[in-house]
Image (cartoon, rainbow, N blue to C red; front, side):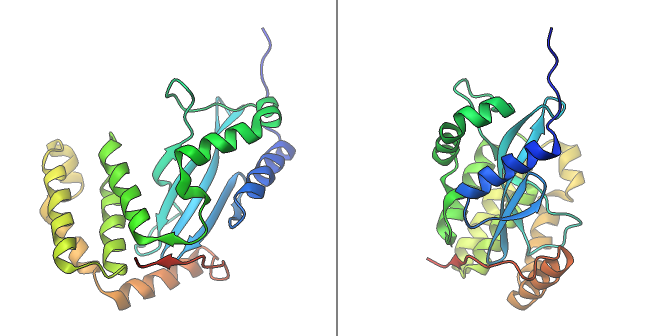
Length: 224
């Protein structure tokens, strides 16, 4: 039986470079991790090692700069899926021989990864879709979504309706999960405490400085 080897530093560099060539507005953040900025949101593609680092899978994710976080997290992540619905597992050999095919599949599954300017409505729809399909407790994505609506100057009544919608989802979670997130009432209170444009803008700038991304190009978040 032949044993596969872990991706080498050189192979990781080639894989990252190849993906960066098709994700033209992204910048290298770390090895196998590309990001771009759209206003208060970071959009990322993490080429996540799998099978003990022998293969990788492309992972699209967001990260909101409107809340304080210790690291750039993989929020609302979507992995590239294969024909049977399982996460792809891409070897170096397959990367070399099927790269265009893999890019085409990723673009079809996550078109948001390939746009430069991002529209509020498109990102809002992505968040809502993710919350619908996520099998975990996506409270951080709910927070990102509500703050996006506020940043994009959505009607306050519409924002409150969305908050109530998410509260009803939280109410259905097990007690242990609700306690962990201070219940739906606690979450609502924390959301309202963040809804100040001056405060959000200040947080965004501090987070950019903390992650040494203050010089990164802003590709734009368009209010539509």
